[in-house]
Amino acid sequence: MNDESRLKRQEARGVKKSAKALIKGQSAGYNNRPAQTPKKTIWNKKIECMNSKDMHALQSERLVELVNRVYNHVPFYRKRMNEMGVKPSDIHSIDDIVKLPFTYKNDLRDNYPFNLFAVPMQDIVRVHASSGTTGKPTTVGYTKADIENWKEVVARCLTMAGIGKEDIMQISYGYGLFTGGLGVHYGAEAVGCSVIPISGGNTRRQLQLMSDFGSTVLACTPSYALHLADALSENGYSLKDMKLKTGVFGAEPWTENMRLELEKKWGIKAHDIYGLSEIMGPGVANDCSYHAGLHVHEDHFYPEIVDPTTKKALPEGIEGELVFTTLTKEGIPLLRYNTRDLSTLNHKPCLCGRTSVRMQKITGRSDDMLIIRGVNLFPSQIEHVLLEMGETSAHYMLFVDRENNLDTLELKVELVESQLTDTIRDLQNLSRKIEHALNSAIGLHVKVTLVEPKTIARSEGKAIRVVDNRKK
Image 1 (cartoon, helix red, strand yellow):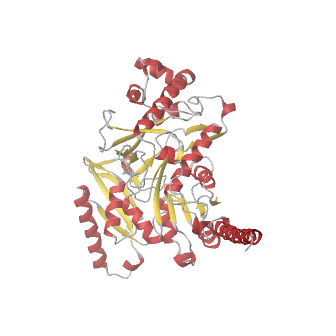
Image 2 (cartoon, rainbow, N blue to C red; image 1 turned 30 degrees about the horizontal axis):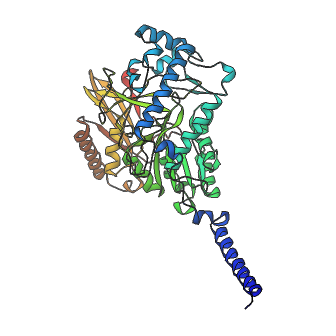
Image 3 (cartoon, rainbow, N blue to C red; image 1 turned 120 degrees about the vertical axis):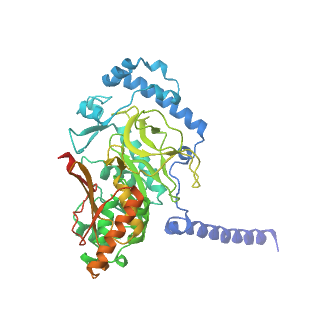
C-alpha cells in the first residue's frame, strides 16, 4: 500500500471516529439532557459549602458595613446605638453583634410606613407589607439589589428540594402585598421552572389546573395543601390525575407529623421553606432531602438564639427565640430582629454537603404561647398528638375560655369519613382516647368534641387554630 492510499484510509477512519464522537456528544447534549445531565443539587456551592473561617470573615465584613450604613442613614438605629453607648467603630467582627440593639415588630409599626428605610424612595423598586392581626402593618422595601439577592436565596431553597428546569411549579401562595407569591415566583424562574402564578384560593380551579397543566411542584401553606388533598375526591379527582412530586410549604409553623401526613396524602416529598416579610420573605432557610433542620443562608441572614426572658445568647442546641440580622439588605436593613419564632441552631455540616448553619423546624412562637392554668401550650403540640394518633383529620380548632375563674380548653376536631358509620359509644371512646393522649402529652385536661368532616372553616392562607375568649 502506497503512502497516498494509507493516508486516505487513515483519514476515512478519522472521519468515522469523529462522526461517532459527534453522535456521542449529541446524545449527551440538549435533546437528551434530562437523562444525561445530573440534576443540580446545590445552587451556589461556593457559598453553601463555604468553610466556617471564610464564612466568619464574610459575615464580619458585611456586618461592619451594615452598622455604618444604618447608623448614618436610619435615625432610629442611630438613636438606639447612642443610648447604648455603641458607635460603628466598636464593631469589628460578627462576634461584636451582641453589642447591638434588638429590633422588634412594634419598632416597624412605630416607624410606619418608611422611617426604617435606609435609602430614599427613588431607590426602592418594590414595597411589601404584612397585614398582621393587630395595629398597623409592617412595611418593607426592596432595592434592585435586594430583589436579586431574594431571587438567589429562593433559588438555593428550591434546589435543596430537588426542583429544577424540568418542573412545573404551581404557586398557591398569595400574590400582592404578601411576600409569599412573588418571593417564590422569582426564585422558581431563576432555576428554570415553568411557573403557574395561580395565587391562593379557588380550590376547584387549583385542582383543575394542577391536573390539566401537569404541575409537579406545589408551593403554599401546609394547611392549604392539606385542604387541597382533602378536596380531591369531592371535585372528581384522584392522585392518578396528578403529577405532583414535590411540595414547598411554609408561612406557618407545622410539625414533622404534618409533613409525613402531607407526603402520605399527596405521594410527594414535602419541604419546609422559612421566611418572614421583615427579613426578606420566603427564602431565609429551607430543608434539604435529609430533613435534618433548615439550612439558613447565613451569608445574607445571620441567626442567633436568645433566651425569651433575658434576651441573652443561648448555647447551641438550646431552644429559644430566633433572631436575624440582615447582612446585605439595602432597603430596610434590620439589626437583631427578634422573630419570636422558637428554634435551635446546629452548626455541624450536613450530609447533603452544605456547611451552612441549620435551624430546627419552628415549633411555635413565644408570643403565640397559651398559658392554661399555669401550663405553657403551643397549638403545634395538639397537632402533633392528633397526627401521631391518626384517627381523626388534621383540621382542628382550640377554644380557650374562663369559667368560675378557671381556664378551660376545648378541642374541636374533624372526624374522617370512615368514622361516620361508627356508633355513639365508639365516638365517645375515641373522644376519651384523645383526651387521655392530650393529657399525657401536655398535662392539661382538654374537652374533645368530634365534629363532622369539612365543618371547620378552611384557610387559604395561614390557618387560624385558636379562639381565646379570655381576651374578649
